[in-house]
Amino acid sequence: MGMKESLHKLKMKYEGKKMAPAFNALHTFLYAPNETTHSGGHIRAVDDLKRTMNTVIIALIPCLLFGIFNAGYQHYLATGEIEAAQGFFSTNFWNLDNFSIGAWTVLPLVIVSYGVGLLVEFIFAVIKGHEVEEGYLVTGMLVPLIVPIDIPLWMLAVAVVFGVVIGKEVFGGTGMNILNPALTIRAFLFFAYPTWMSGDKVWVHEAVERAGTPDAISGETILGSYAQNAATINYDYTDMFLGFIPGSVGETSKILIIVGALFLIFTKIGSWRIILSTIVGALAMGLIFNGVVDAGWIDDTSKFYGLMSVPFWQHLIIGSILFGAVYMATDPVTASQTNKGKYIYGFLIGFISIIIRVFNPAYPEGVFLAILLMNVFAPTIDHYVVQGNVKKRMKRLKLKTA
Image (tube, rainbow, N blue to C red; front, side, top):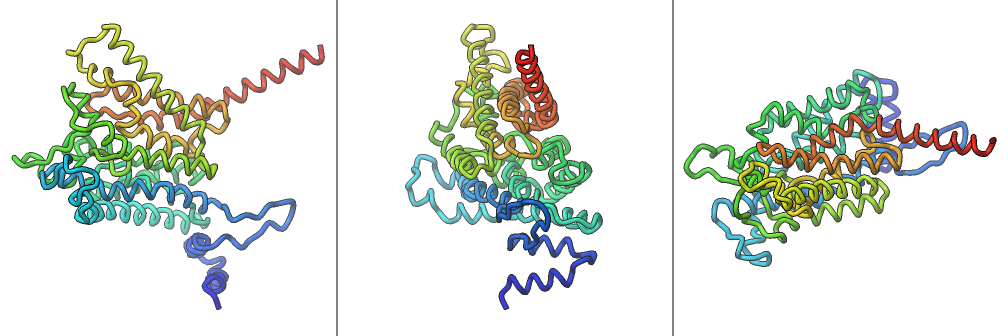
């Protein structure tokens, strides 16, 4: 007897019992559901919600693997044990210690994120008597990628419980939430534990434990340097694009994010309209700020000058805008549903992200706040888009009947 048949027999054994939802979750995770609709026309396919979520996880895996490597690389770079000048193809650059120290710090984040989040999901499924919802499969992978490397695990666990319960379950579960759960977790961490989520001592491994000591590691991000009007940035454009810079675990490699975007667009999971319009919105706001600086309306003594003077296109290769545009803004539950609404929704995310980035020097990254804000307004955008279409059709109808 094969594994599939054995699991099906066990599933039937648990049918109708208290723990049935928990067991059904394991069964449908491994195999397509074997139930079919018995009335009416229907199409049977294997691309259920779990398979859709798994496709997004596949798109995230390259960012996770690179984040593991970069965690170790940034640590040894900050401690002086390796030098950036040694080059991309040098032996020291690809030292396995980079991967080992990265795995030692990143994988616990993944384990805690999935362990705590799925435990909460299972508890709610058993209490409510419904199937375990699949939405956390992607959230569980996103959360470790959008936090600093040394965030304490207990903080992450508390934030995950808050994000799943308050960000999703109180609204009715997957498909009912109005806020992106992963960003809800990120927002909770930012407001509850701000010193662990910003500054120049949280982005490189062991920076937090050693903060305040003479040999503390400084892992300031490029955004942080610009926010302080730093005269020079120690990273070239290649480093920024490839991802060899400090930052949240999965946000740094823009080339891998682009590969993930193309994969999601090809599989029709991610909306190219939202991704494109978010990028256009960010570039537009960046151009406006560049114009303000070029016109001489603000000088280099202003606290806003550093990020205002950043070339508009450079905003895309520093910070989290690309990661947010590809993996967060495109969340099908919390994003706009109409095609025209997706353009408006994405454009405003990019536009507002740069505004927050420039006018908040204490925390010069605003994409997660911009996405959460537009999550709230997405239904309103869709409402007015639909009403606009209704009015147009009514006008055409009146012209035909006149």
